[in-house]
Amino acid sequence: MKSLRWKITFYTLAIVSIFVIGIAFFIFRWNIFNPLKHAKLSIGGVERKFYFHVPRNLKPMPRLIFVLHGSAMTASQMQLVTGHWFDSLADKNSDAIVVYPQGFKKYWNDCRKSFSAETSKRDLDDVEFFERMIEFFSKEYAVNLARLYVAGFSNGGHMTFRLSQERPDLFRGFAVISANLPIDENNDCANAKKPVSILLINGTADPVNPYLGGKVIVHDGIDRGHVISTQHTMRYYRNLTHCRQFTEEDFPDLEPSDHSSAKAFSYQCPGSSHKIKLIEIQNGGHNIPNPTFFLWPRNIVGNVNEDLNVPAIIFKFFEELK
Image 1 (cartoon, rainbow, N blue to C red):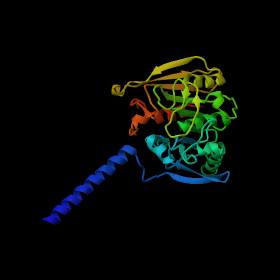
Image 2 (tube, helix red, strand yellow):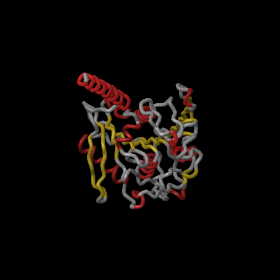
Image 3 (tube, rainbow, N blue to C red):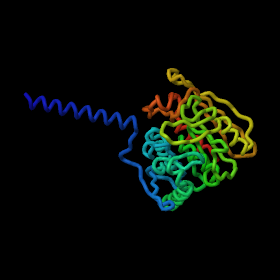
Image 4 (cartoon, rainbow, N blue to C red):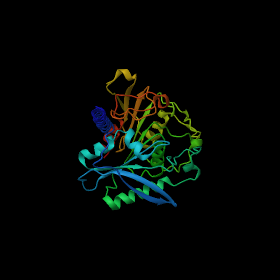
């Protein structure tokens, strides 16, 4: 009888374990058959790592999309919280490689002068890190150097701002989630002041990055200083391209219970191929809305919009840039 009971318990646990693992694979879209590849580079004597997804049957001259994590995050966590959507969308046409670089000790050396993370204190050359990664992918995968893109969240968004200001010539498009430009007194970037195509996605109730501008608040003991408002951030990029008129579009409110909605402002830039776009998430917090990942600590990051698929929106924005 004890033997039978033990067997029943064993098989029950095995079935439950398989079910839980299956649900986890479905929810988090883990790809055990085509896992992330990885490589490393030495930048100024510091070893830097990056991870990347290469679709099967990759087409010649693929696009290259960098996806940058936020503060205290890892590259693999960024793949997770974006719901693996960038990988899935790249797989659809097999025409893009998705890169998840790792910030030094989980942080990026962005434009904020007061940023007190070690990467900033040591003034590590993160711009060179991207230049060298591009060289790597040009050599190993013959990527299309005219179709390079970068998207970043929070601290990764600020690093995206840096690349847009210091190396606008390298990238065809930029996308920033949950970040505003630093105020002038807090900005130490060498700004090229050249027009770029950029998509900005911010929540109006973000508890970390203030939508209306002000001090960035993260309870980790690291100072980040003050930023300008979302509207002033948009004005900076619009002025570079002389974009004035805009069209306004409401996203369908698919989940009213999330107490959040979203609106897109697309700016026309006469005589320019650049595109400037803002997605304003009403009552949105400091996160990356998508239909796959939902385990955000809402007591820290605020409300999560359940209508949008932000990675898909970014991917489409990049695709449409000519």
